[in-house]
Image (cartoon, rainbow, N blue to C red; front, side):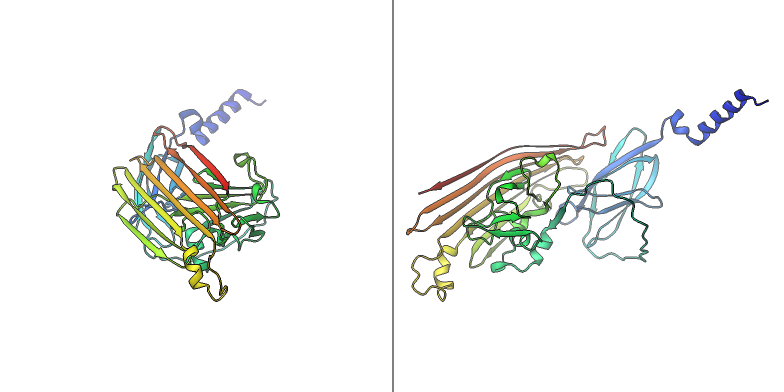
Length: 379
């Protein structure tokens, strides 16, 4: 005869030994932090962050933030690496019911790559819809041959399949057959209307301050409601947190400059306050009569296009990694032909975006408050 009471007791004891966390409470902890460039203080995005000797790991996000959650408590060696930077090892500790913050500074330089083992498994049936998303970095934009030597996101977008730029009021984007009004252009979360200059080669966005660009050409979620063609989401970086600097450049099309630097330098145990201000102005209305005189010998007007763009940003990062960014912009375009008409359109606005890291939670809170205004006039 089977003793069911004794059998059930043995099963209960076995469960306790196999799954002690159910009865004793899981002995797990979490850490998080940011990975920065040691020379500029700029976040290093998509860096590899792993716990040496384990299978735990993650990547930094677009703000340089990493999270390692639900790790057995104890001390580990955190290994951080990214192409173009020296690998760094950092001793970290996971404590129960605690979230420790570790700031990592990577030094630019080469890394040694070991043996690579490539393997594959049979692909499983797809059960989710993947968004058609293209990520573009500043490095990719500057690597593309550009008009007048001025790299611009508009010129890069035109090499993406399904994208055409044309139109009589600036370079209007037609993406996968959709009209320009069905595209949504975002700058640090704010909607920008008609952000392409009348000359058709350049946008209002300064390439030097772009962190990354996401181009979504289908199946985007309700976050980007109100558009059915495409989303172009542009994020700008923060100003240099280590030192002041700037640059000035000129071409037959425009002159531009940028100044940036820390108002309070970044330190390991403290936050930082940094800024940048960038501006560019077209000069083609003045240079075209001389530079392109071979194309129009009797031209006394020149090309009647002009634009002025200004963008500024103030960034505050706390000691625990929370960040606040205040920004403002003014983009002004005009087509002034005394024989036809004078058309002017302008984008202006500003806002505050924030990314909060509560000390008692592994979650992040982010938001945006701002305004964007578009005006057009014809005389």
